[in-house]
Image (cartoon, rainbow over all chains, first blue to last red):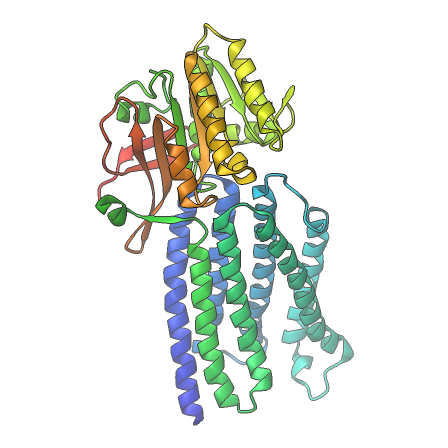
Length: 244
Length: 222
């Protein structure tokens, strides 16, 4: 497979994802206006914000970036933002899940640990951003502080997002709200496709084939994220209702 | 007739609001503003010196905070049956006590016009078999309607299988549905009256907007 073909598929994938995300962002903004309860407005906000961050990440892949620290910041910040926004979204979802549980049970002490975890995540993201954008990071043998900075972000992200995932899975089991169950399930599928897309780059030997597979998987991930956002609340169809 | 607390909704329902001695069900997904409709109903009752009872599975402080958020002053409050913060507790695991306490509170106020608002219908439907809940609500609605009272109940859309809400709707004299509707790519919050005692079927949808100054309901034109 030629590199040109792989690049074409990758660019087409970014454009398709951008289209899905732009429609999704607009519709989530409308949904947010329809909610009265601040908790559900917040859920809609975080869904839209996650889509905005992913759209920006896709857009940065389509434009030529400047070299140096500016280019490094533009290419790394969206990735950091995705981790941060994912964690914030998991937090909001866990709180909504506990609120919708009739007995308001605290899941795995989330209400006590969420603030300390926010601090750990924020510190890790700042350290990771400095490590990834430091001029030393591109040296043949980066200093130890830089290596730790780049490595710790993966440990913290996997650890905290994993814990958050367990909490929202329990929340989805405890909530009687079928809509929330569906929303979390679709979000989980979307995250699953994203993870597969990332893993694909480590296991597929050919970079071009990995690019094509990764592009297709990220389209699936984006589409499921869109479906998840649309499932925040049951949507009716006026025409169908009237024709009954 | 009993004012809904929302002038534009009163107008829609024939100037005066909900029918006397009726049971009204408001169905909608979480977060859409069903509670706000309940708060305006209770506030209207408090202004008119009706006896108002709010039966909720939430703490009183939560409901008061929401009321303030909906622009409703809390200088006058209803009598509570709540999960905490009220003299009479609402325990979802004891449906009989909820029904008993509600009926006792109503009996103590015979002679006054009574408004009962509640959000316990959906939780009780989730925690108990449909058949027993049908009998439970059927009996409660019938007993409350023997007094000069209006029952205003909220039900969560998307929380129950469709047949559950359809079954419960049969027990109520009025059913109002609030939800977000898709029209092409646009998403709009709409409201419709599925049925209302004494009124011909109200076809069509109505836009609604809840703000700190009240609630507005206007016909929806496509």
